[in-house]
Amino acid sequence: MAMSYEEFLDVAKDAAKTHHPEADAIIQKVEKLQGESYVGLSVRPKGQNAAVTMNLHELHDQVVDNPKRLAAVMSEFLSGLDKALEQIPQVDVKRFTEYENVKGNLVMQVIPVEPNKEKLEQIPHKTIEDIAVVYRIDVSDSRHQNATVLVTNQMMDQFGITPEQLHQDAVASQAAHKPPTLKNMSEMMAEMSGGLMDMPESPMWVATVEGGVNGAVATQIPEFMDQAAEKLGGNFFVLPSSIHECLFIKDDGEFQRPQLEEMVQSVNATEVSAADFLSDSVYHYDSEARVFEKATTFEARVAEAAVAYETAAPEAAKETMTVLLVEPGKYPQPVEIGTDLEDLQKAVGGYIEVTYPFDEQVGIVMNEEGKINGMDLNRALRDDDGRIYDVVAGPMLVVGLTEESFGSLTPDQMQKFEQQFHQPEVFLQMGKGIMALPMPDEAVKLQEDKAVEKAMDKAAPEKKTDTPAKKPKKVKEESR
Image (cartoon, rainbow, N blue to C red):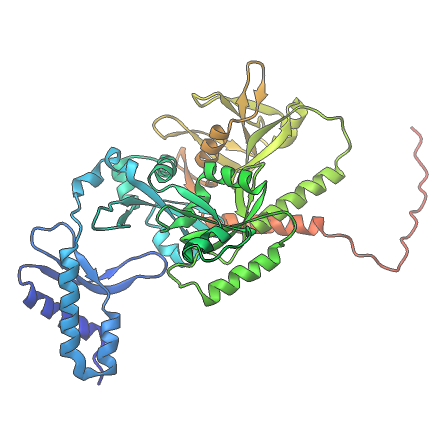
């Protein structure tokens, strides 16, 4: 009977203890992102605060194929263990207890949501449709390249910071520590061939970060995306070729979303490993709105805006401002609206009330009678200690303040308050108080999918029939 993997681990554990009698050896499960979790053997040398954990499945397969090779396989295992122990990094555990010690070494990683659902419950993250941004601390040195430690919820509690602060600091640290790069595909091919290939400029651009590891995070650095839009000349598609890089293609009509989706899905199915997979969806960057989203979401948003434009009564050009619209159960969206009172009332669905809860020159415009009219609860407002002192009912606008009235948010303000109000909330009555909980992304996505379907249905042309329309019956007007 073939030796099971569990039995093989026991043999390897005994061999490790014999070879390194003062080391601690235990069998444990290793939780990793991208569905790469495994049960392996962990060996910690005496006096060390870090251990080597080895996945022994491949070595076990050799024994299953040929049981007589057990001794040779154990020798190979011990040789690999010795080498790993020699290269084990020295980690200063105290370094991870103070946020100021690590925030300058934060980096980001973009991963798919679906294969990492369980793990994402344990770590801080920011979700963008079907992908999520997670955060790592870079502990690389001259001997250990690309060595990182994943930031967990437990570490966040110890740091005493908010997810918004973590994201802002990670974006700044990533841009300085491992900055994003953008090269034309022809330039990349020339470099790979040692200058032997001289090709004309390609419509494809490769976005990654210095070093090439986890390079898809380049899409999460706003300044880089703006620079890319300037270089490509406006809006562009984003093809998530892996967690390490993305391809940018100008949205000028030459390529259409369906054919790009087919390309991405084909490459993922044949060329990309599960550990490197990011998404089967094509994304899009709206250079004017500064929005990174799925291409299907962009199309629905444009279609909805077109329908609204076509059905609205023509009116004279008027002054507008760019503000942040925050609706119950939805992620915030930058919108451009008029500055007149009627425009604000229309946006929040009734008479307006304005509050100024922040030190910055911004205000929140909300429906004055939102709670009275039973509108859906939207977002909680908190004091400096994080305690809820009010809950907004119905849609709200985060607007900039001018000397005389309301105005557009600055790009920094737009980014800050989008992050602050990013996650929709649900509310529970707790005695005389109320508790706000983040709405699960699945619930948000379900609502957004319904909105997309509704928008696409509205945008679809009416079916023509051969049956002539019936003439309306004449109705005698009532005398007044």
